[in-house]
Every structure is written in C-alpha cells, then in structure tokens.
Image (cartoon, rainbow, N blue to C red; front, side, top):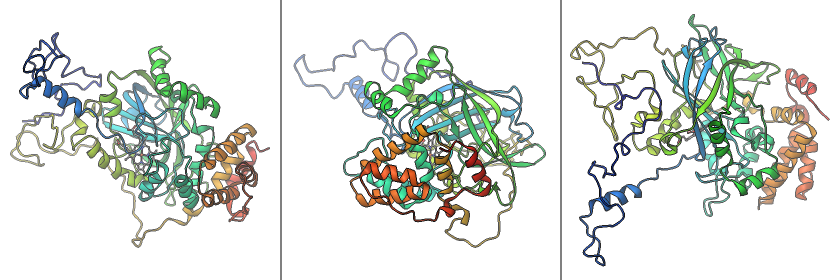
Length: 536
Ligand code: HEM
C-alpha cells in the first residue's frame, strides 16, 4: 500500500491547527485525565512535604522546565506573518515554476528579523534585517531567504562563523547586544575589506528601517531560472514594498527602543489586524546566462556586488500580501525553518560560494535547534504539496508510515513503483569547468571598494550626513585606536570627504588612502551611472 504521507492531523491548508492540549471543555493532564485542582500540590497534610507521587505536579513542572529551545545562532529576534502571493505571469517566459504562472495564488509565511541581537533584544537597532519567505507551492516549498540589503559582508561561507563571532557580543561580557559598535566588528570589516560594502549599507539609513512594511528585500545571490524549453537566465530577486522604503532617524530609533523595544513586531501585527495589509511586489533582475556569469563587468557570483537597477531594471512578477497574524508565536515564528535548498522545479542555485555554504548551514543548524531530523513535519514547515519521501523514524517522528522497506524501485511494495515524472526537479546541467582544486577566489572578487564608492556617490547630502554620524558614533565605541585608524584608511579608499569628516568626529588624523583612486573608481559602465546620480 501507499505509505501515509506526513500529515498526521490531515492539515494541508496551512491554517494554524489549534491542536493537542486545547480540545474539550475540561482542564486535563497531558494524558487527558480530568483535573479538579491545578493550584495545590499533593502534600502530607496542609503543612507537610510534597509527595513524589504527585504526577500532575511533576508533569506540569517538567514540561515548563523544557519550554525554551535554542534561539537561532543568528537572526534570533524576529517576527512572522502569514499571507498570499499572487503571480502576474510576467515570469512565465523565464521559468517553469508553476507558482509564477499568471493568476496563481500561493500561501506564504514570512519571517522578518534582526541579525545580531538575542531573542529579547530591541527592534529598532542598526543592523541588517532578515526577510525570509516560505512559499507553500503545489510543486514543493520554495524558500526565498533574503535580507533587506542587496549585498553581504563576505564572499565565501567559510568566513561566516568568523564575521558572526566578530559582530556578535564579546565572549567575556556578552555586550554589545545588538549593535556593531565594538572593536571586533570593526577589526573584522577593516581587515576583510570585502565587508566594506555591506558595512556602508548598515551605516546608512537602510540600517534602521522604520517598519518591516517599509523595507525592501533581496535574495542577494544570483539564482538560475529554467523554462519549459530548458532555456536558462540568471536572476536576482527583489521585494519592493508598496509603502516605499522609509527609515527611522538615529534619534527616533533611540527613543523608540526605549519606549517600545517591540516596535517593529507590534507595527506588523497592528497593521495586519487593522486591515492595512503589508504588501510587496516580487521583482526580478534578469541577466543572460553566459559562461562568464558577469553583467556590465559585475561578477554575478560575488555577493558583495549589486547590479544597479539603472543597468538592469527590476521587472515585477507578482504581489505578496500579509494578511494573518500567527496564532502562536512559538509554533510558527520560532519553529519555522527556512532553507535555500527548498526550490521548486524552474529555480536553481548558482556557484556563488556564499550561497553554496548556506546550503549546508541551515539544515545543519536546524537539526540542533529543532531537536532532530523531523522538523519538516512541524505544522508551519509542512509542505502543502503531497509528500511521499523515503525518510523514516528519528526523534519526534509524527507519521505512521505504511508499506514495506522504503527503497525504490521496490517490487514488493505493490502498486507503488518509483516513477520519475517529467514534472520533477531537474538540476540544470551546467558545465563545471575543468580546473585545479584550489582555495582561492576569482580575481574579480578582489575589487572591494568601487561599489562602496558608487553607493556613497549616490547619496543625497542629508543621507551622507547620517552616514558620517553613524560611522563616527559606532567607531567611537571602539577602545582600540589601531582599529579606528585601520577603518579610517578604508574610508579613505571610499571617499576623501567621508574619511575626513569621520576622522574629525573621532579626533584622529586623516590617513592617506591605501589604494590609488583610479583603482577604486567604478568600472566605465558604472562610473557613467555614478555621474548621473546626485553628487554634490
Ligand atoms: C538565518 C539570511 C548568509 C547561516 C538566516 C535568516 C535569514 C538569513 C533571513 C533568518 C531565517 C529565519 O527567519 O528563520 C541570510 C542572507 C545571507 C546569509 C541573506 C547572505 C546572503 C548566511 C551564511 C550562513 C548563514 C553565509 C552560513 C554559512 C544562517 C543560520 C541561520 C540563518 C545558521 C539560522 C537558521 C535557523 O536557526 O533556522 N539567514 N543569511 N547565513 N543564517 Fe543566514
């Protein structure tokens, strides 16, 4: 017979099941025995010691003692909401993914987060924001696990433990809680200068969003789409908020964190409950899938680089509306598990070395965070597509699988042969270059400053003032003068005015750039663009 699929409660709708522990009118033990009293332990007389035989007491306290699970190693602080994605159909020529076909509606769950702070840290801090979306498509789940900034600190996932060690709290005091205002952060980003691009985004107004509803989202990496004819394009994913992009000023953020540390989460849930549903358009920047994997001299495998929208316009392919607050924060926002490898047919990964490492990391961390290999069966993580896999047993197994031993083809498991269907996921057969095994980057990854300069040149005067103040404040928290001086040398490579202003704010001398300006100048295509942007 057909093995039972993994939907023990029969729930495939994604509606939050109010399940075990909350049925019936009477209060019970976990075994369903009706209780008369939950306020007094069983004692030898009113003044006597508590009896070991009091099972209700032990069950109640035992369970409470284990209510917490490990917080996420990064992005611990976050808030999720349910919604619906409706496709415009404009992506149909590029991908065979069914959920992007015209008019198709797909349920989603989105979790927004900060990166560095713990679960209880304040919302309105200067940090990158996570923007992770789970599309419950009928061809399998698609997770778009992005951030509100289009670039990342590092080019290779092997440095991720290092940047996070440097950016999170000092190991002796566990401070600072949620800010990049400390020595090891600045030490890292001034030594690993590929981090300078992401850092200037953090120091800009983008580092303090006004609301989750007013943030952009970016898949950051380049992905590969494949259509029905087997043709491929390279793409970057973008979320554009209908309300536009807005930030808090630094002063507003300080007040907000004091008055309401839950500001962003409250804003999200209040807006949904008031019927002011947050909305984003999903957009694509599409590039020809050439062997060089570059566009306008920009290496598309380098996650510290963006492609300016003036060079590759973002084409809208659908709309996301968040319309339902979770029923239970723990069950949904805390237990949701995203993964870049959750891809439906029509979307594939590229060789971006940051992306490749992430493909390992999320599954691995969730194995600990959600205690065992069956977290895909937790209601919020269940696909809405039918599941018929060969995974068995393990901690917290919920399914009662039928059939004989799970291997395919299987002549003994009557009527259930393995059939590879034409609708199945096919890895795009990209040719892998014949090359020596080597721990190295492509040469193009060595350009760490030209896009940082481009970003600075594109800012208005008031935005530049905010950036100068942010660098000055955050670097001002460092104890090590050598670290401040090294970061000032990085700023000298970005722009002389930026460097001089921050140096003056810190009371330090203005260093010489370590690179000639010609080396950090944007490429010809980009410098034309820089000139078109407002430069005072
Ligand atoms: C969590 C985004 C790079 C490891 C997250 C989350 C987001 C995110 C949005 C929160 C997911 C949630 O809400 O549950 C990104 C982006 C990256 C990036 C956009 C770069 C483009 C990396 C890298 C690694 C990594 C390079 C490791 C090699 C993790 C881990 C978690 C996480 C371990 C916690 C996941 C969990 O406990 O469920 N990331 N990340 N990330 N990220 Fe990343």
